[in-house]
Length: 319
Ligand code: ADP
Ligand code: MG
Image 1 (cartoon, protein in one colour):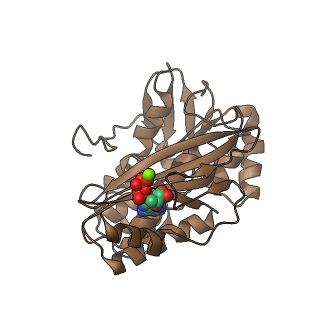
Image 2 (image 1 turned 120 degrees about the vertical axis):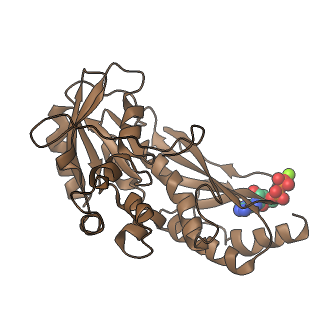
Image 3 (image 1 turned 30 degrees about the vertical axis):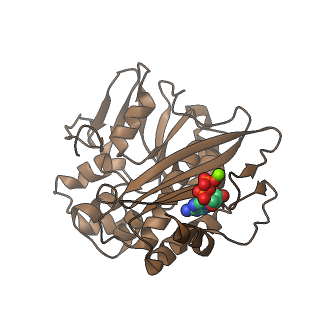
């Protein structure tokens, strides 16, 4: 993007040197130099937000900045890791100072909350697209993965489900569900604690059933989910009538929750629940891992109920 590229980097994305000793060299050189402490492993992920696909052209720049980092922190949380550094690849249609200012404000609000240093990136001209990469740390061999669930494990989720889905489905432009869609809080503290208790963990970004499906992929396992136990916020209950089909389909199938779904062996459930409760983290037991090779949704009487499809696959076209 020529001259103004450097101006943009300097004005919006270069901050005073961090006091993070792990950043040997940050923004400004050809690459960043980072120190991985002994006994730790690097955990890394990247996510891209594209205008028109992940957000509309009128979306708030602060929300885009916040969410582009939040979705990555959610992946880092699901690994039981501690986020440490980020890089930011920005493709911009032009140099729009007020947009950039608000984007940076949203991004750094969340970065500062988790002590994350922005250590580099790339700035180019083109259709608006944002790629954020986050690097985290986890004690060697302790990363929490999608595999490892066992029959009889309890299935839990943090927080509430379906709020972001309700905001999208009903076009809510204020209130709790709207905030949950635009400013999701990544479950970093929960992921860190779960390292000691969970068999497997995934973040719920594509919808509970889709992501639980990923957790069971490659195993011969299934799960029974008690639909009546799904955690719903008061705002969700206000927005969606209990006899509306979406009262079940949004918490089961809509994406963008950014909660954690995890499995815990029976013997560790009480200790896990005490640890999360002690840290002020909300969680709900929603089901159990089975040997059935399928996910079944059960009503209060234990009868399987049909739920129509869910999740978002960019290459199969739609929800
Ligand atoms: P190079 O041409 O060597 O790839 P650049 O001119 O692209 O370097 O970037 C110069 C410096 O600014 C690098 O340290 C790079 O990581 C950083 N940088 C570029 N764009 C961004 C951005 N959007 N946010 C943070 N740092 C950035
Ligand atoms: Mg270079």
